[in-house]
Image 1 (cartoon, rainbow, N blue to C red):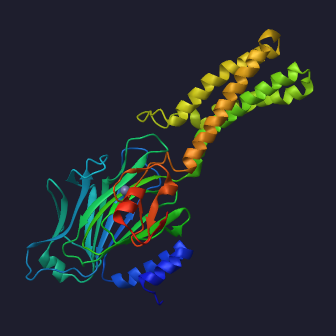
Image 2 (image 1 turned 45 degrees about the vertical axis):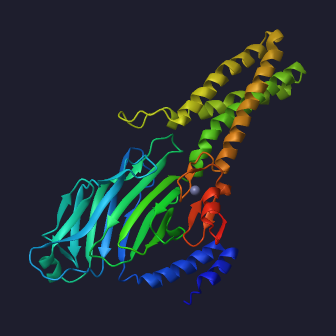
Image 3 (image 1 turned 180 degrees about the horizontal axis):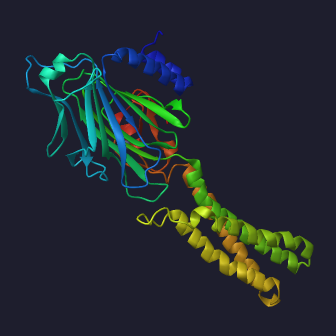
Length: 403
Ligand SMILES: [Zn+2]
């Protein structure tokens, strides 16, 4: 396929970002000569509910540059570290990754001399040069680690996950491609790396996407923050506000109909007061704890407690004034109206905040400052970094468009 220069690509982008990305990725794959670049594969899990998640890191070195000589001299294959501490935005120091197991093969043969050294700052995998030279084929290194992908402090579903990876491939080629697979139910909140371009998400399976990132180096630095992109996780927090709010408004309406002596119409409104909250408050997922060692009070539980505390006394008071005690009927109607209206209003405000990306914790890919309104962020087309307005102005990026 003929791929145009950057100016032509930008003209395409003005009409369709996906098409621009496809042409750019095709061009980059040609430049990087996929058969010879170092390739790194990472697959992220869909959700993490504990601090660390086990993930596999696979590194393929197609044409290793081994030094002269042979024998039992050790060749440094890869060094891996993470930024520390993980919850700090700026890197203070580096720590070696924890590894549960690892394997090194060349061609289809497992290398017997493969070993692992852990220093203060990084973990290094080595193999004897003589063995490396005696076996043909590419080098494949696989690590299973619980410290590359972490859950940061925060409240579900607004918590962020962090993928932190500093990888050096001394004997590799000068270009590295990272293939990163993850569920479409998570999405990037901030991307810090030393790449020259990261593709849009390409679909690889049902609910699974792949991003291809191009690094013009043999040392890659990756710090990607992810957050939940599952609409149902956000919407389920609004449901109790909505159902209890609506029920209290129905209770207020039932009282108004009774006051106006329209008792036939009051009956269905009264049913609306009772039914929806009971279905919502006692749904199965809200009653049982997932395990004995994780006993976390979620924001969903807090909202349920809040709406229950508002609903139960007001609903009881409404029933109390419906079956008698007419002198309190007007007061009960006002209380239901105010509480129901306030709950519906808070649901609307919450949905607006979600819609504008205020609660999802997006940060600038350049300065890591929080981006409160997602639509105010800008996208740098040439690197696909999303930046805040200050960085947009300061860095004078000519090829930026609204992100
Ligand atoms: Zn910025």
